Image (cartoon, rainbow, N blue to C red):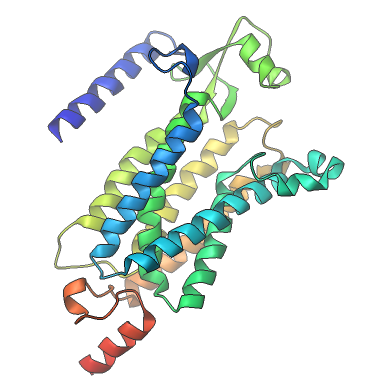
Length: 317
């Protein structure tokens, strides 16, 4: 733990030092030593999914959840999330291409959006928990604890490949992009031509915000306390914390990559809806919600099943 903390401090100090000197340099993945032939985005995303799945599993063990229930739900959410990420990306960001080629909806590898993934994953989650009669609150917490970790690691990939270049800036934390890089990405008309253009790296900003959010959520999930949170409360807290920062970061999005609908991007409208829904549910759960039973309280019953919870309530009464 001390070593990891020291490493993070050194990295942050280096970044602050570079930024104070006049902006962060643009670094391509193939310029980094020892990794000339590795594609960073997919590799890091896979690592994130694996780590997130293990965090899910460990959290679910605290509540006696069967491994099969956990694995099947995770697979269901990942598949529907991936489909949703592409479909909503096409509908919100690629309407011109959709008009030319409707089959682009089936090309799942051609464009994804994070909020589309959230929406698709949520649809799959609610269908699966209804189908298998699982506790929505508990499994929402289990899913979000792992998803947050996986998504945050994925933002490392976005940062490295500069997947979310924002508007021009004079900030010391902007990245100095060579003009040819912006031309190659089809973004030249969004900027005034210069040898180097400083612009926001929105993936990096979001990653920096998600680090303390992960620390808070993992502490809430794995702490040992006599006062336990209502089932589902961790999931809605993540929504309350994530939506506002995503809303404000969207103001730096480029018009070319993120079209506006009534003055705001698709993600901004989603952020407003997500924050309102999460805040409302958080209040309801805080007032009326109950914590999920721990493994020791289940008396051999499977955790997370509505039938098990009903049997425990009947025994208690």
